[in-house]
Image (tube, rainbow, N blue to C red; front, side, top):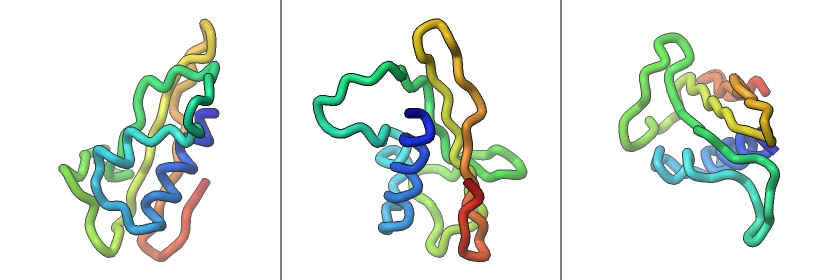
Length: 92
């Protein structure tokens, strides 16, 4: 489920969404779906400095890291991530 949230953010970026707040709030769940996952955070940042980009992403995209963490029951899942490389491909 956490990976699904990352893929939802990835898809939004591929479709041209550049509003960071909109992307970070996407969890990839269909409406009304009750999930076991409680998403703690999803953050977009620079993969080298971990600085956040501000309100919007650059066009064209530069190297961009999407990080996510959350809980499934009592288990805390951290450091799930995917990376956009400015060369034009994702590392998932």
